[in-house]
Picture: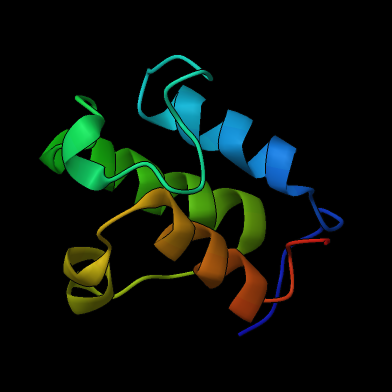
Length: 87
């Protein structure tokens, strides 16, 4: 997989992006936040997430990968694995 035109983002930027995708407050979206704690992380939120990752970073998730996500940390790991998370 390759990354898009965007340069690497910080964890704070990633958390802010996830809060926007799931239409939740930044205070509620932390690395250890569980999927169930985010009201917007439903089927529509998952589709929005997939579109954002694809458009912004050219990261494509399979349905299985999407279903395996259980918390925000899993999303950060995907960004890390694809080389777009700067630490």
